[in-house]
Length: 240
Image (cartoon, rainbow, N blue to C red; front, top):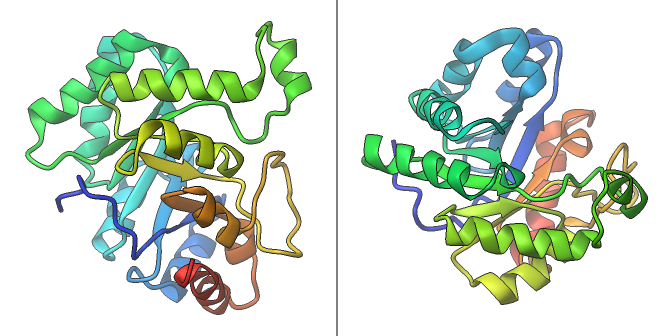
């Protein structure tokens, strides 16, 4: 497994593979270039097709972000992180609201069991969530304050970065430094349908705000020419 300690600023796009048909996913992967993007495998595909699908994509040369958002008791999450890292993934994640003990257990498990462990990131507040829904969960603060609090806690626990909205990237970059990874879903090129995302931003604006990696799904995966769409987005952020 490659050394992932330094953030790679030359390959910042992570294409989200959200498919319920493995043949469609394979067709898309064949059209993409691992030199231009990484790939994210989430709960749907992992549940349908299992670890073998992750291994298949890794063996094609792609860095894989295994987006399973572990959230459980510390020992269970630690073991899950070890199992995920054995698949050769580049990045995996946990929910920051799992707390300090859980995040430290996850990080320690990776450091103790792998010479070059994958990046470990923590989810702050889902980018599909707006303030009204957030308040309905009983939180007595605003989303920005919660994101800031959880990101700071994650860094204190040794986590490599957080998953957050690009709208929060500038604030977090200033607070947490250059080497803390900010992984931002909800990225939409101008003119794209925002889908079920609420807190969104364009690719150049996200990079300018401080995002390390841009998670992009439908604007690429549902394009008539995925590679061309990927290249266009890559070009749009190259000079930022």
